[in-house]
Image (cartoon, rainbow, N blue to C red; front, side):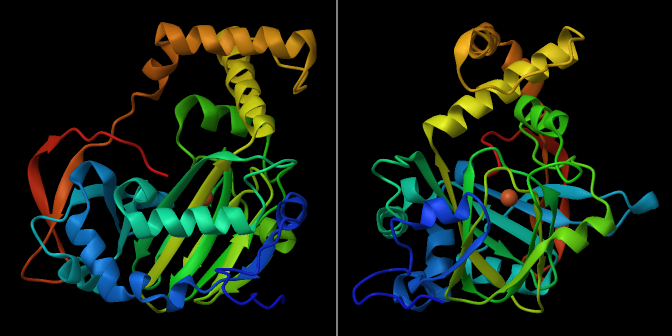
Length: 322
Ligand SMILES: [Fe+2]
């Protein structure tokens, strides 16, 4: 693996984006050793984080027929150190969304990584950069899913195994992408255990990071340790156009009974679809499809770290998951 240049945050180079467009790219970084991102600093970050900026999810036991039970909750007044303790002992998953907007150190780290990857200038010229911090329990899983923007992951603390699958049939269908684009729910792709034969599998250690090809489905299994990771998101003009096609083809298939025949990112058909999805956006019909708000229905138990307390009446939440 490449060595990190003196003074650099990572081993990324301007050639890196071209590499990760065709295959997952494992790289080294130094953010895990930076005191600004040590565990006690993450606890301080949790203390300061605005309520609208985080989601904490409890991964319930597997229900009947293997159905997943995810519940969304609240810190319940615990400080950051106790929240970390709860996550270390429980079955929890915390997403501090848009960290670059809430913390100057996270913003500087995000800008540094994208600058080193040469992703700020042609030929890649990415934009819409976002950074999240994910804190999750030992043994926690992120189920098989695909993301619409470009994605990367930097491991800060703990170890996790990530499976990355090719972004094509049978792992990912056009219809699967369209459904994600319409609902904004990333899970819901069909997963079959035999897919694992074609996955690239990485055991991420602190100081390692991964970028992968656009829309590659992936799933994650934490090893037996508290995990803290940074997630990165980016867009390019091509990704934005591809997203317009996902939305427009999804509308045609689901609401007009037309099986889309093209995913071209230019020409008259593209511009007609761009107009169609824009009309649905502006008329509010798209938001209507996406209004599947999940209620807040637990808070962390202050007396039993890792346990949760049911809340009575659900309260609506705003914001979105990464
Ligand atoms: Fe993801």
